[in-house]
Amino acid sequence: MSIRPGAMLDGHATKGIFSRSDGAGAYRSLCAFLAGQAPAPSRRRTIFHLIFTIPSLYVIARTLLPLGLPLWVKGGVALLLLAASQYHLWSRLSSGSVFAPEFPRAIVILFNWAFGAIVLLAVLQILLDVGLGIAWIVRRGGGVALPDGLRYAAAGLAALLAAIGVGNALRVPPIRDVAVTIPGLPRQFDGYRLLQLTDLHISRLFPAAWASAVVTRANAAGADLIVVTGDFIDGSVAMRRDDVAPLQALRAPDGVYAVPGNHEYFFDYDDWMRHIAALGIRILPNTHTVLTRGDERVVLAGVTDLSAPATGHAGPNLDAALVGAPAGAPVLLLDHQPQRARGAAARGVALQLSGHTHGGMIVGLDRLVAPANAGFVSGRYAVDGMTLYVSNGTGLWPGFALRLGRPSELTRITLRVPR
Image (cartoon, rainbow, N blue to C red; front, side):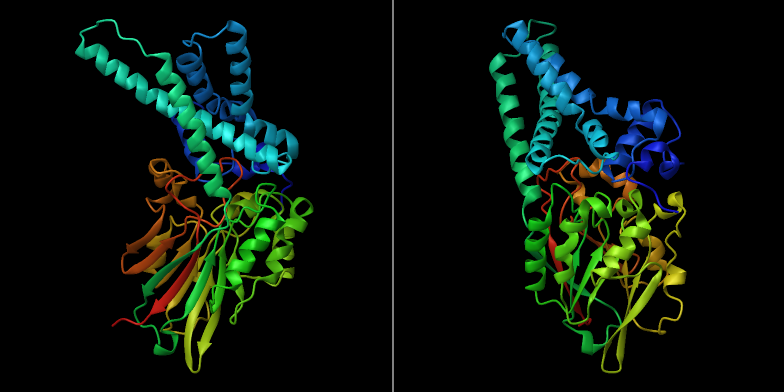
């Protein structure tokens, strides 16, 4: 079965993700959303949107209202803050999905800046209030006030950091080189290069021009193989047809292979798999291919995403993916989400390439994303004898497109024989 854009808001696609509407359930909703899972179903989606109102309410109460401004100015700014805090609601109303804002790109960029500035200002205001509390304790209850100048400075800093964060998110990523030693790698594959793209999230925010620039840089990287570890898009094929068209120009001597990410299941999965295949990209849904150099072989396997069963599709099955694989050949695994890495290591995988986390997007925020991903958020991990590499991502989902300290990347991975 496949689902229309926004069907995850009706409950079916998120069945079992959230089970409580109390504080713990809200926290899990937020963590899951930051991890790129679908938002809460029907009657709980009000709570979901209210979660994103909290930072703006805190900013209004602790930053805006104490300022010496006319009441009408405070009222107008408060309304703007509340409107910006509901970016995901406006996105859902524009397309049926919080993951596919169908506004002009400039508006999407403006929403991301405004929403990001609110969140960052809330964090800065919390820090100021903590300092205020410490001063109150030190002075044993003596009068302590926060000057308006500090509030204005915090607002200015938040606005600046949000602008920098959005700019970082929108850039065409540079090449990041990573060398990985593979036990048992045939010498003919020593120096073999894979280029990993992941989490492109092609959308109104990352349109055809951006995708074309990414393809140009990817093709110039000199890789033997290009792989895409999921989350190609945000939107239906009808919405994104022109924007994904540049991917047809991806070229590598050994081809272009991919696995689906969770966002492909949020829309019409079957339609997207047909369309991506028509672009010349070979999908590996619980299957594998064999890379050869002379008589030597390496297995490239792929699995579907953990989101698949909720939409009636086959979930990730590494055993099925490796059926018929040549014995003794090193296995390279494409798995969109990194959380099942220990299971892959136990199955003998040598290298797993994942994405999904976007590197946590902002330093510090990665700690919130980590629990939903078994602690694997960004970069290289040694996992029970296997190397796991979690890319920060090529693009970013357009619901919170900020990067601070977690840069986007095109990852060029060079395989090496143990010395």
